[in-house]
Image 1: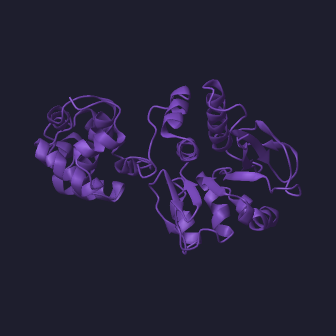
Image 2: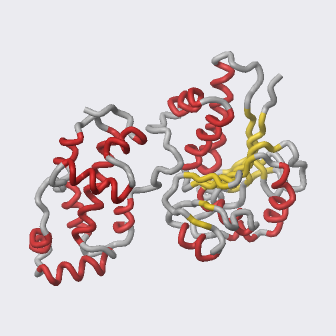
Image 3: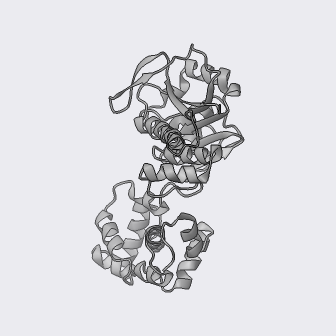
Length: 330
């Protein structure tokens, strides 16, 4: 009989529930799919939650998880360990001596160790990411890099593997990582079946960006919020600096200075990123021709769109669609 692999998640008070439930349910569905297809007579995976002690663990939302075992219990049967993120802004879990000691003691006997979101901080504190490429939620990446300079943080990646250690971005990226591990263990066909059962829009490879880069400029409030919304709806128009300045009742000189101060980039750079972002979305989700997409996004030509994609992403628009799209070229 084929072995049943134990997928265990280490839970802390204030844990982000989706960081645990998303990946564990993905493995559980894969196990059920194999049974339904008649490919196995015994489950491929079983899932458990581990915490400081067996019993209830209160999550970030106030909902409770039931931990199957505590840190003092045997861990030699764990195949894959998931380290989820905890309460946003509170990373005290990665400094808890008991968690660190347990991880150091058991790491060598666990086949795969994976983090989701800020769970990467626990790996970093344990020294397991030194000299390695790693990612975390993009909003936490700067802190991870600052506190652990030996880690090679790549903020935008959905998930990364380096020397057997897996790290992933925030929340739903844990599902992407679980699907990738299922594909490694079994087949791409199984991973795609599970993605379909989960209603996942797109099974994303690890090197797809966590978020479209120009959106970072919109995280903090600015006096240009109304203008940014207007730009998004009018990218197909010839948007000059003079036009944008007029909408804000500013001189061009004053507009350029104030826009750059507020958003950390020039208006022309913002427009370029906005057009790129819209083109990415259309390539991922529609069968529109490249020519139609370039017009809708305000590029001067298909060649101009191709140049922007190559410079920003190292891919042509056609190459981007082949990797990340769910519809054929029109």
